[in-house]
Length: 394
Image 1 (cartoon, rainbow, N blue to C red):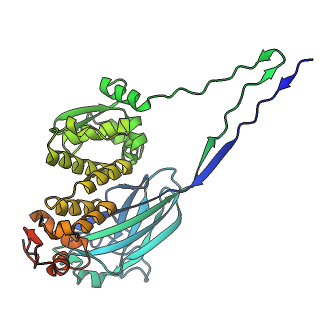
Image 2 (spheres, rainbow, N blue to C red; image 1 turned 120 degrees about the vertical axis):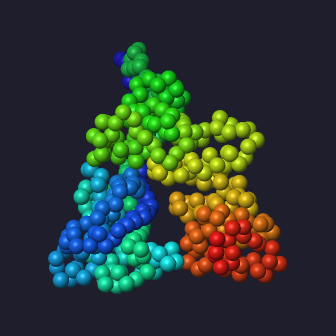
């Protein structure tokens, strides 16, 4: 009589996780007085921006959110979700920028939505009384600057993984065929080859006159900004363009960005600058960090932060601090402050770029320069600034 041997059952495991992302947007309204009188319930809308894979815009209501007596005397600010078929939780904090000191309002208005879907709008109906705003330092030269900080908590994601392999089953004298495990595919190598050979490309970018061909689906998988551009509400407009023009970026930086998108590996800097040219190498990394922030590529941004943290010196720490503040790089900012207040910074002449001095003062609640004078004044006064005086004059 034939005997049967049963293989053990495969076991699986699953993990439920939620991902959160935080980001910010600055909305500048020039010619503020020209927007007055549009009527209650009518808004001024910012450009679209991406946080946590979702596309938002800011809506500002200069004549009030509604005709209600409770709203009529106040300006309002709301966050509006543009992404289709989206589900998430989100919160927003609005503040106004004091343009006499370049510091944010000390009393920001916050709002939260337990669940946001396409078209959801949430914020504050009473950001500030209109009469108070128009007499304040927040409105200067007919210009208003609004900052918003956004936290997005995405829907739970469950990942299932197989944890035990099956064994061969035999029935009598016959062996049931066992399917071999999948081969180790060099996916990044295959994608890089597709990029180099330009097979199946369907989009062309123009960067300072240089053309780059790529695949929309690959870019969209790696960057939520590209996903919104190619498959979001504005996709139809892009399909009519012969080339997508990329402003404010060097061709070498865009080439390095594409290489990372296709290979998930930091490109060799020797391909973009001299082998021993550390200054050029750091400059490429700084521009690549800006590009990563622009296209919401957090992994590339963190890699660039790590490289810059390891190469801080008296010549570049001030510029790195400005960069960290502009692009919300908390790790790099902490490393810069630690360097400046350490023995390395104290015993060096830290070079502050002339164009970056006002931004540096904004990084800290108190005067940046006065803070450093207090920190270093007791240490033989050997800390100096180039391009900025103690009073902050440039």
